[in-house]
Image (cartoon, rainbow, N blue to C red; front, side):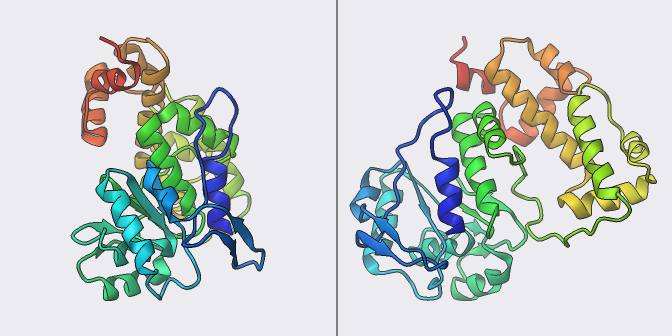
Length: 302
């Protein structure tokens, strides 16, 4: 039910200002489907619906240790062969593996079942720590709420940062977590208000992205030593302060490139890079294209 809620929320209606999706839940046979909460879902679409889908997401189920029916595997393979994006998160990844769509590729799943996936499918390179892995037209994600990360990544990839950020704000979720971020974190216990101070510092950093923001300054505002701050930050977010800031700067730059006609030099200044050249270097390294090419892909600018 959690997985159904995730995809329904992300690809459901979010107002006229955001793109609408032709969303449908499908099963091998239309009719009632039992869920883990005991609440049945009445599904009206069968596998024929996959034949016209641009994106197919295999959702996790309790019987994932048993391969899906041949008709399901054939439908997944056919969707991929005709050019659809095929994705899965949590133990839904086992369905893609059974269909042969992960052979020779990297993939992830819920950390608890990563070894089982690797044992059953030796041709798949399983990366148990990743939040999600993008292999082009096959994308896999980690377990439980990491389904949100997978879906938001797909939105960001296909519709841009502005759309993904707007929908994440609508759902009151972080706009972006890198796929390489650790999926399993030791749950941090509040220590004398440190968690609250850390949250305040992160909010302050977002509002002052145009400034240098050295880790020493962030630590000072959190009332911690630099070493304690870095350790606490990683425990709470699964990434380092430098990586978090880099991701935030690039995400903000993407949105400005998509939604404004500001010169690249001004965008670089607003997101905290010293020059357009530095922004370009980071953009090419992390996104694969220079900022102006990225802008053209979303605006059709000359």
